[in-house]
Image (cartoon, rainbow, N blue to C red; front, side):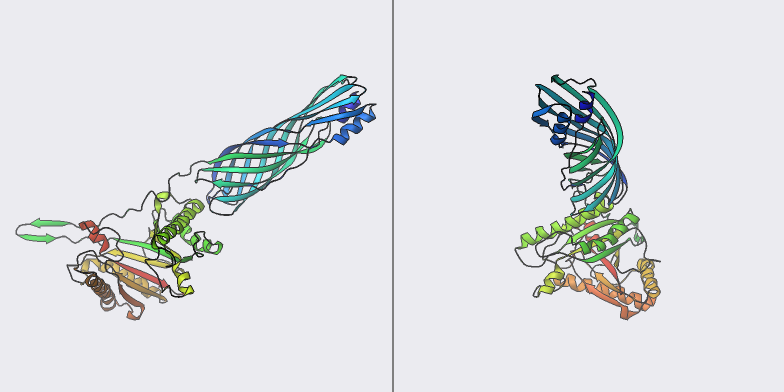
Length: 493
């Protein structure tokens, strides 16, 4: 009967595969951990059991298979980038077995319990911002504990054995990330197993689990707006003469990556547009003090309220992509939707509508324009310039910053610049505000040409009046923030 035990002790196992995975939306490396639970399944080879019984003088009347059980795994891993990780852990596939009734009268019971350790290489493929697919291949070091029992005419001298062995494992899966830190995973995995009596087979585990990434921010990207500190103006009074102490002009440099466009009434980022966003993400990572305002725009098809909501959804999609893909802090990225209120061109043609379905990324930089390498993107220097009431003369305190602009243009002869004028709420009518902002922008152009030697043919002045306010003009600080000049450098490829 010892021979019967060896023949019947084998539990052959088959596969069950499914599509699933985690998309770890992280460009930087990092640790993660998690747990999964689900159903394990084996396929019992009843024909082999029957042949083994016949070879030992028995026939099988019936065979009942117990081929399913609950399995679980605990795992941890390290993401090298968004496409590859190494993962290891502990697994328990539960118990499987069979009961055969025999002639002469008796029963034969077989059971196997499986657990062990595994190490996998995990390849990951982002599908959307939240969903990812994965495939894994690795090794498992499993312990198989076999036990057998007989009644009636069946008796077994060696009822149990165990073995440990190294084999391969494979798997596929899907993952949905609720945030940078937390996700849910569904997987289908196949474990190659050796049992204790010399047979090989497969066990499948279909599981659902959770994943937690360590050291990732949980903030929502729209909860933390980008702050702009008010300009500092100092004055010292000495009777009977008022002495105004000039302060250095406050400047900010930032880059705008334009022409991120969307399909009609959709907010999903197209694959080809992600390369453009890669420029923004790389810049934000290189300069950790910089911030980004993501502006969403739409065409004029549909109700205004719908377009506002759609454009904000587009901006939020881009903001989440930057945060999740490049691990930019949520507090550095803010999204806003303008709907169809700021078209670049007329919406009378389909081409015009396509151009207006766009994203503008306004990036506040940490570097100075002097010595800046020219790249095929748009760079802007924003200056908060103080003008006397209803006057457009450029004050001497801004000479240093404007001199940098002129020097930059001379060093890069293929670059042109647009000077944008903006005002607070000091003029009586919007028309007067528009006129004043145009005069001030033209005054800056004239100053750089006449006093700093800039080429007039490469400079353009444009006024926007009160139409592009940064802040409410109900305070002195807000009025000063709105009373500004933007100098936009345009690079020709």
